[in-house]
Length: 495
Image 1 (cartoon, rainbow, N blue to C red):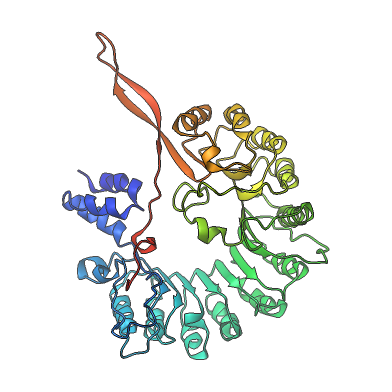
Image 2: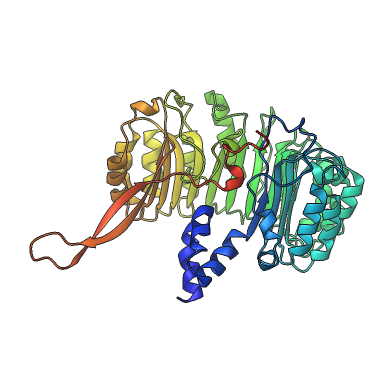
């Protein structure tokens, strides 16, 4: 069998590591293709352990589910493209803790490395020092770095970072003063290649002056920008900064309540994707006033943009539910006793999308945002380019959706959170999923309150006397989340 064909076949189970391992045992061609996928991304992310602080015999050996040890073998090392170190690392100091040496030795062998992510929750301050010294040597291949305080909290580590050049993407989690003081210098060295700059989580140290210092180095080439929560920056400051980035296509911002609204719109003429983070949980939108103000902020941000994708993420929703935006993969179903409350409707935002962006909108992922029947009808009737949607709806919405799906010819994925109903009371199973998916010309993935189905056409022998042909039948199958080994919560190191 041709290798290229094997790669296409295995691409369907790229995220299923167990399946890839079994495929690698078939023959040499399958082993070659599966190995490239298994070791494309190497992750070390130990889970939290109740013995983590007490086990004095722990030398930092890798005991959590990780492909890092085998990735250092000569036959696999050159396949590694992405390296991620996160989770709960041993905080003990060297030489008792040898993890720093293991990481730096592994990095030396990963000659094709393109992306490095160092974002552990617990760690020793020197765990990445040796690794950071090596990163400037990968100028020919390294394109992306994502770092948190483990690499950016002291001047020594930051000085090592500024030597890394040729980057196209820099992501910093909760950046402090140490990294922000030297960030303009780092941006200047990568000005010709950098297209993405992301500042996530706690960005309290980011001030209007800090944003202004970025401009000379990112003004021309930056296409993606993210900013977490910073009470030092008003919407007026933020919109003024964004209006000077004419090539921005992807934007993610954290919204917080402000008494004074901005006097102008950012005018992002090339913005295609916007993600808005809001509040402290999935029930943050408690009043009509809050929803109205938030919708007005989103409308103001995207008013002049040919928006294709809009996402709203409430609180820790991204971490809790995991997986893709539609809840098709990853995450868990809601418990049987949990009731999703009915929040005020986001109809004003949907009406704006219908009025201003109907011809361009393709992806609408607003999981916690409740949408009324009237707004749903308007959305599905006018936004015919929709390809995926995720929203909260009422308990009578499914009948309306069945009526409207034929009007959305490009919709292939849909997810709905049914409000004001207990999951055990929701009568929506495989038969209902099949009936609904048959109404959509291209609808193949569906999720309702955490349960997920995938539809496909299957060819079966024709049944009947004298029949010798075949017939195509559309069927659905309930999906189970595919969880990578390093994210499985049933494995607790040290327990």
